[in-house]
Length: 605
Ligand code: ADP
Ligand code: MG
Image (cartoon, rainbow, N blue to C red):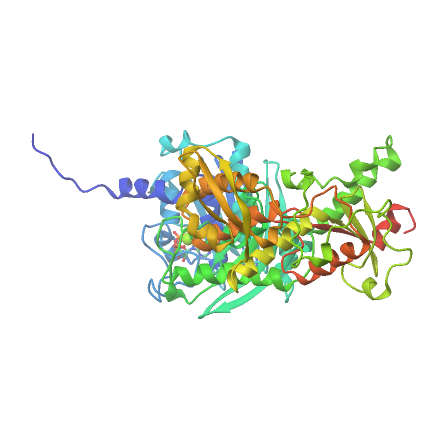
C-alpha cells in the first residue's frame, strides 16, 4: 500500500487549531475579553445565551480595528502584538489565533470603529468563510458576536456540559480577569442567571476593593496583604487567613504578569505555604500576582496560556512560600473574623426561635471541619516539667474556674487580654481592652508545642528523653518497615525507635517537649502519616508533618482544669508564638468578640 501525504487545507488547519484554543464557551469569552483588555478598554460588557453556546457578545471601548485590518484580524497567525518578539510579551494575546479559531468553529461578526475613524466597519466569518468588510453603525470600540459555537465542529458540541456549568465557567473566567484588572469595569449579563457588574476601581486600594466585589467582603476582611520581592521578581496581593479556608480550590486566583494562570507549580507552592497551617483537605483562599521580567517566563507553553514556565522555578516557589509564611508569622495573633461572625450567628437564633442548649453556641462555624484532636479527652496531660513549668500539673482545687475577681490591669492591655475564667474545662475566657476572647486550650497548646518542635528542629535540635523501659508497640509489618526506614528523620525530632521483630517496634526515646505520652498511640499515628508520604514531599515538609502529629499527642487536653497562672501563661505564649491563631489543622485557636458585637447582640447598638 502506498501512502500519500497531502497538505491540509487552510480551513482544516484552522479547525484543528480551533480545538486547541477554543475548548468551550468560557475559552471564547477569555480570548475576547483579553483582546478587549489588550485594546486598552476601560469598560467591557459580556452578554451570553444558552451557556455561551448560542450567543456570546463582548463589547468594549478600546482602540478598535481599522477597516483594512479586519480581514487580517480573523486570519490565522496575524497579530498586532508581537513587535517585541516572544521574549518580551507584554500583552495577553500574541499568537494571533483566537479570532481565526472562533471564526472556524462558529458564526463570528466583528464590528469595530477605530479610534478617530469616521465610521465603523464589520466583517463576518461563518464556519471559516470570510466575507468582505461592510460599513456598520457603532459609536466606539469593538463589538464581537459569536453565535452557534461549534456548529462547524460538531464533535466539540458533544463535550459541552450543562448550560449552567458552562455559564459558571464563563463567570469564573470573567472573575479572574476582573481581579487582574480592577481599573476596568466589567459587566456580565444575558438570559443566563448569573450576572456580574463590577465598577472600575482606581487608586491604591483598587485591588482590595475589586477583591471584595468579586470574592466577597469576608475575604477582604480575612486576608493579609502580601508584598515581597526577590531577585527581580515580586509577589503582591492578598492571602486568606488559614482559618478562612475552603473545601475546594475555587478561591485561588493566581496571576503571572497580569495573566490568570492555573499553573501546577504555583498551586503547589501555595499549598506548601499553608501546609502546616491547614488540614490536608482544606484549601487556602488567595489572590496573588507574580511579576517577573518577561524574559524570565515562557507563557507560550500551551494554546490557552493557562500554564507558564519559569526560567528559575525554584526561586518563584521560594518567593511564594517564604512571603506567605513570613506575612502570617509577622501578622501576630489574628483569627478569622468569620469565626466571630459564626459565633454571633449562633447566638442570634436564641432571641427569635426556641432556646438552644448553651453549648451549641460555642460550636465552631460550619467552615471548620471538626477534628479528633479537639474532642479528645485523655487523662494524661503530658507536660514536661522544665519546659512547661508554667503549665505544671497541680492537684486541682475544688474550684478553678474563676481565675481572678478583677483581671490584672497589665494583662488587659495585651492582645489576648487577661484570663477571667475557664469554662467546661476546655475553653479559657479572657477579657481584652475592647472585648472578650475565648481560647480552645487544646488547639492553642497543640500549636505552641508544634512551633516549639519546629524551632527545635531549626535551631538546637529536639531534645529527647530516654524511656527507662523501652515501650514495645505492636504494628502491622509494613508499618514497622515504614517507620524503621524513616528512623533517622524521626530521631531528628527526638523519637528513637527500632524494629522489634517483624510485627513490633521498640520505642527508646521520645521528645521531651511532649512529656509523658502514650508512645503506642504516637507511633501508630506516625505510621499512618508516613503512609501518606508517597507524594514526593521534601524532607522539611515531612519533618513538619511529623512534628504536627507529635504536637497533637503532647498537648494539654480539653477537659483539663487550668490554674489561673496557667491560663494567663497560655495567653501570653499564644501572643508570642508565630502562627498561633490557628491549630495545626487550620481551626482557630481562639475567637474574639468585640464589645461592639456584644452590645449589638444585646440591642445596645
Ligand atoms: P492575538 O490576540 O493573539 O493577537 P487574536 O486572534 O485574538 O490574536 O486577535 C487578532 C488581532 O485582532 C489582535 O492582534 C488585535 O490587533 C485585533 N483585535 C482583536 N480583538 C480586538 C479588540 N477587541 N479591539 C481591538 N483590536 C482587536
Ligand atoms: Mg487574542
